[in-house]
Every structure is written in C-alpha cells, then in structure tokens.
Length: 124
Image 1: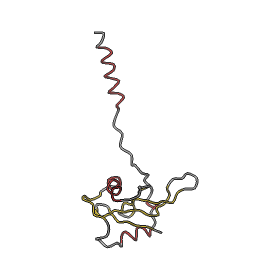
Image 2: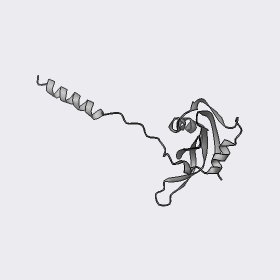
Image 3: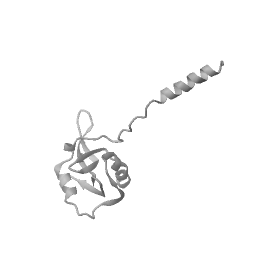
Image 4: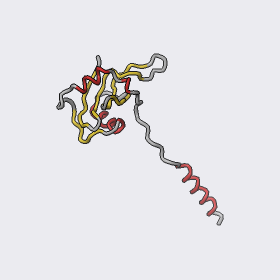
C-alpha cells in the first residue's frame, strides 16, 4: 500500500505533464501576400509549364510545400507566403531596419497551389 500511492501520483503527474499535443509551428515565418512583389507573381505565372523541378506529389498547403522546396533549394528558406494561388518561398528577403524581420521577398521559389513544379524566381 505504501508504494501504491506514490506510484499512482507519479503516473498521474506524467500524464498531466504531457498535456495536449501542440500544433507544429512553421520552421520559417509566414508573411502576408503583399510581401511578394507583383513582378515575382508575373514571373511564375508566365513561366513555361516544363520549367523548374517536378515534385513527386502536389503541394496543397504552404507548410506542406516547405520541406519539398527545402530539398530543391541550395539556400535556406527565410520566409514564405501565399499570393494569387501560388506558394512563395524566399531565399533572399528585405528586412525591417528596426526589427530585422523579413518584410518582402527578393528571390526564391514558388509552387502553384496543388501543383508539382517548383519554379525559381527573382526580382533582381
């Protein structure tokens, strides 16, 4: 009986300390659509259909495409955003002078929603 009470208390504490699983957070910041310049959108929407790297499965969400784009990219993904039916992943960004946080995209990759082709773009 002496061991039963401490064992029950420890088991209860272990269960309570686990809590509800948290939703995983994106590995990179997600910016608003206006962080993507219209020239970047124009580049990817006018690209030939066979340009870029083809993925094995379609990309249906911004976070879902991140890992696939990271495999294709030779540089780290610094921010991501969705604009006009495309998922944009920035490898170069403009930052806020005070906070250092990304504010707009300069170059990177894009994938059309439910598409399989990763297209490189740049506003340079």
